[in-house]
Image (cartoon, rainbow, N blue to C red):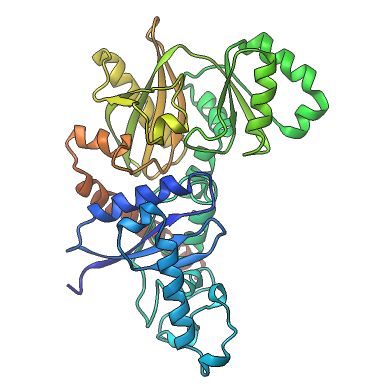
Length: 400
């Protein structure tokens, strides 16, 4: 039992995908092998508070976890006050004092956030973090930078891969440089549009045409995405996307099947079979993905020629490598319904892990069950961490 790894599952966050993250995390926790891992659950509220949680797993998806975690925090805060009757420390201000930790362990300032949340205590360190976080401040390289500073292994892509994968416009620049086929697009920020809207609209209408898709550059789960069929809808869509990001992406409409491919590995990744998404809405928006009444379905494997499937798998691995991804990513494509041409759409560096999510379904169809997939992701994270540690040691020896 003492050889079990202590893994921290972090969920929630401040992005628009907070709820999706909770359901993903619940599914991950339910499928982790409890004989191999001690699971520490850490939730991040929409306000940005980190809370240790040790209640029923099903309360994570429902959102009830937060009330349970705050009650625990209250009790811990009171138990650490010398005179609880005069305590005015405040529920969300309690921080576990570093002096209570084993002094032989060096907890740096970046790692202290795990101490503050109650995840690390009495000298018990987290072995690895699985940030089941989607969207901004979770999938965009920010929290990955925290783990790098803290010197702790974590599941998923690093700072660079996460940041570029999250930014759809910059990812397209990289894809273009690498020669990956993609549709026409235009990116600009809100200030540019305010000062030169006529020119930008003219360029959109001349080069992309209607209909077109309008997206925030940094967002996920199709939040803030609209289909514009005319100038009025285009203006409304740009305004709507601007709620979620200061930079806007316009993409040409491609009459294609929506195809997804899962990638797993580090420097030598493998690609799964591919699946097709058949949305119940006009396109695969947030409601079509997660709405309670959604009738969207997936087809695995996708009904495509063998040569097309293999080319998609090849492109998926190529995109994974060029963005310097690690661990996992889901790469999304369009396959034109008439010509059969393949277009890369985007890379998701922390895809959904809910019971209906494509990433685990694709690997299950490829022969890797959910629980084994999670185990593989943890092993890949440790492998990546050890590789980086070896490089750091060699640099220090060279300086010496």
